[in-house]
Length: 233
Image 1 (cartoon, one colour):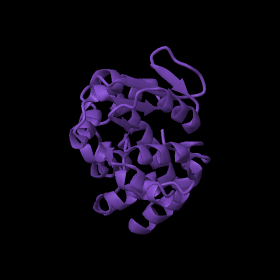
Image 2 (image 1 turned 45 degrees about the horizontal axis):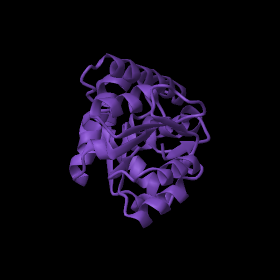
Image 3 (image 1 turned 180 degrees about the vertical axis):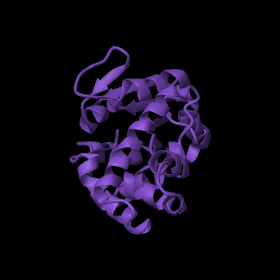
Image 4 (image 1 turned 45 degrees about the vertical axis):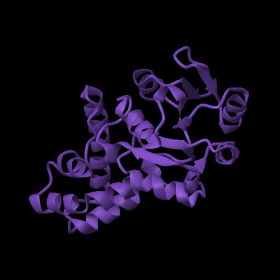
């Protein structure tokens, strides 16, 4: 868990995105109708993810062509599919992203200690997150960023962690995994065999090896332990 948002996705993203989509499709749907379709598509995406035992990520083209615009006139559907990558970027990026409290201090520590940190994140647009981290001034703090839309699988599939550890030439057992959900992050950690599964949440959970509230507590935990070979989100 590296960044957080102070605003809801719908309020922050959907009106502007719906306006752009309306222009692309020549106004055949209203902004309100497009917003409704985007909300419906997001729910369908969540349902499909729950049903996929292999955790196969949904591509931007499939999201827009089959989930958002499946019932639209063919020219409108083709227009959004042609711009799927850019539209998905706009769908994911949030100006309200902020670093979790204490994360700057943690990343300063890992850089000074030579401890490589990788982002391993589920998202429809890894590029949006890369740009977001750069805008927050911490993009250079990460040795690697692995995103589900680029890898083709999402957590809790262990390939997310394996992709990072292969690239960094470390064993999963030498890593800590830090995440904010039990189902996605802690389960992914167990399936990959990482050294420690850390939950960042307001309350402890028995499934995690430790629970921290923010970057300050994570840094304290890291300093008190023998440094692992690498860290990941």
